[in-house]
Length: 492
Image 1: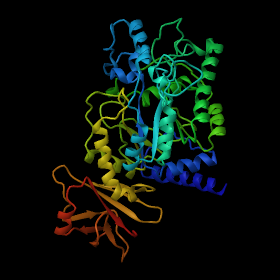
Image 2 (image 1 turned 120 degrees about the vertical axis):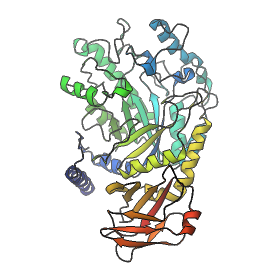
Image 3 (image 1 turned 90 degrees about the horizontal axis):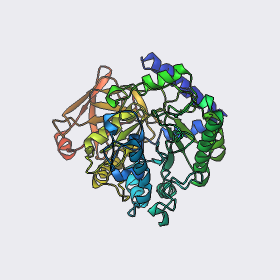
């Protein structure tokens, strides 16, 4: 109880302090379950995770699930199949991808090893996307990788989700189950008696309560399977925020605030109350997985334990737990010959996110054969080399106001040690002769070190800040980094 009260006070104090600095407090509602609060605090220490989008759709190299949706966007235009202009033919051929999905090179141990060495501390895997295809052995549907009609069902590793969770746990990573609340294959969500109109349920739930109750029970049952039969689960990462108990006002806010980004091509949709009784579901899930972190994405309320800006990084620190989910190369799902971000960009992205108090969830998409592209391994290798030296500053850190000064980010450890990250500029791969910080000054007698290099760094006080002096020898010896990390014992 004492630790629970301390965590509540910490969250309250953080909200007050950041509001004073002009930050937007959103409508975040803190969790009240003591075990979940402790888990959220521990999750904020992890900083770096892996997201994987994978399903039968990977065979076509298309945007996951979305080409089934009747909404018109350029990024999910139907181009595959024998007759992409005929929706019914396309949908059948898409769902028949189950009968050819056979990732015989699936080796989750190799992925887990690369992720662990890169410094990743948790994995979130797509157990089911919006199309309803299950990458786990659900007994509530035959639209799954373990069904007899799927050629991979004869493989010893056929229960893909279980194999992934076990492999990553064996390497010490936390596990998270991505699960789509909408299910476009379920007859209780898209009733085959009616054509789908958009991403939403294609009938009125309030006018068909028995049918909607079947879908609610179906959703509960599948999630509870994942919470019961797949080992210790740390995170339940729910997608499809339009499936929620919502008033017309809250649905309108969701589409405006979450889906109103013009660059993603989203438009306003029908307003439907799609209540699947999340409070009840979370209670049942936590009975099986005490302390479970629940991320009911884009649904304002206590079941959204942390927020998940998608493919973007907030400009400033946010006064609640958050994580940016970012594509590392290609798209969310497998893209042939994907171009991956370079190591400097990716490492600086991680530092920028961590300095603002967030976590980075980096997406890598496996191929239809069950492999990662070489570009993904190359990127993680660059993280590995950098994190070997600098990870001590990244993990367990918290923001240090003002979080960033020019191209220097800053964090602080719980023992008072501060870290200042000098981000390499595009025009040079060496440190400057001097780094001037206006916002912080070490205490008299404190030492400054450059992680990965022996010897102290000279510094001088300057008004309220300090000047860090870099010798010519150190500039030459440390050249070629994406980010250099300076450690300070104690700040004034």
